[in-house]
Image 1 (cartoon, helix red, strand yellow):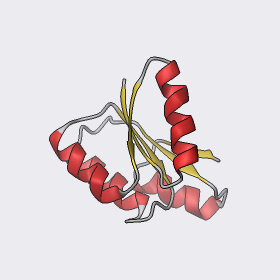
Image 2 (cartoon, one colour):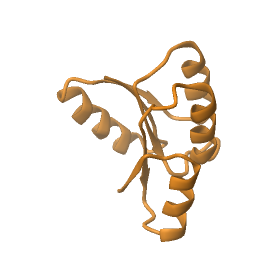
Image 3 (tube, rainbow, N blue to C red):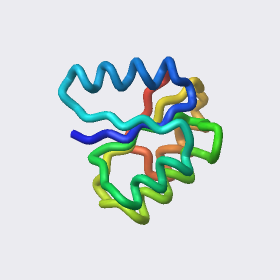
Image 4 (cartoon, rainbow, N blue to C red):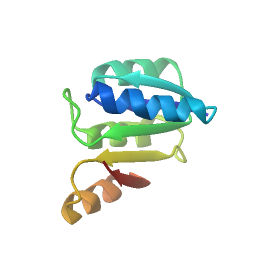
Length: 102
């Protein structure tokens, strides 16, 4: 599975990619939303894993973009440091499939 991972915390993203790679997945790291969206316009992935608040733009903006531009069944996982019920409800309403509290 080809997984695009957006997280501005390099320690967290390196660890996540290491675990995914060990499980046999190809993981492509992105430190900012602009970089990730440019790459995804050229090459598809099989799953998106997004940090809640990356440095460039809102992760929810990326979810909206993915739902419009990529295949509709693309799994999207949101990693968040917030367990706020309101944040989780908002993310699910936008199209996130699931979330993981860091």
